[in-house]
Image (cartoon, rainbow, N blue to C red):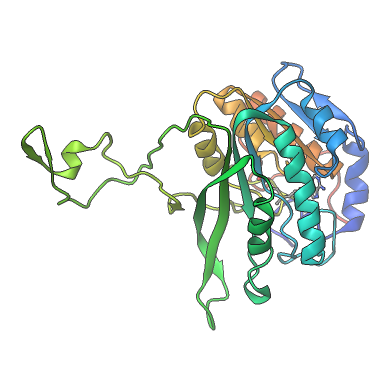
Length: 317
Ligand SMILES: C[S@@+](CC[C@H](N)C(=O)[O-])C[C@H]1O[C@@H](n2cnc3c(N)ncnc32)[C@H](O)[C@@H]1O
């Protein structure tokens, strides 16, 4: 018996059949937040028409995308979320949704993309994806961030795999707000003369804590004991990481995310008081995202830990 009350949704077609009648959106439909802040659609990120319909006449100053990785992470069955395409097909798919993301973003915008790299397959799709991104002259590559997981895999015959890759691009010239971690500065001894006085780095700095830089050591990956866990979701990103991206983007009003899954970007936006327009090709994940937001508004909880997001559905199969 899995620890979650709702098993991973990519592993049982039967379970999906049970949940679908409880999802309020059908393909192509868009949920409008009664408070007027957010939108959630059942959309295909590769469809220009669907993406532009989601955004209407608004354009996002920040896009955070976490596409399917093109390889299975422990799933038994293939689903829309965990497909395996040839690298060429995967890059064609990526080119289409990146083009749509650019069309739905503001003149000055931040674009972040989480992407996997398969160690046994030439680190694909990461290198071909990076090459493909050069086809967009309006995008400037800015940073290659690594989030270090606490737990890893493949520890016996290789370096333990603990990284998640996050690419950062800019369109135009958006504002960037420097962020700090809660990790205290400990290294001293970088001396510099300021107005004739010899100063040491800690007395010169604006914070007692270090900046995250492009290697993030202070973000816990989500697992079932954490309050933010969303049972059924199998590729959830930590709220802290998404919150950091929003905070670093200055005074923005709209963030877009074409691969909602558990609604992490949606909840992060709600907590920061900005709008999020997001969508997923799978009506179950669109529903999960809306339910997560509604639950947050009702209770202040950011996930379900191990309780089912679909309490009305009997989970035993
Ligand atoms: C890696 S997950 C995103 C995780 C998300 N960042 C979170 O924190 O929960 C990828 C999601 O993309 C969705 N997806 C797959 N193909 C899609 C497409 N063509 N358009 C939109 N969503 C798609 C999957 O259903 C899956 O929920």
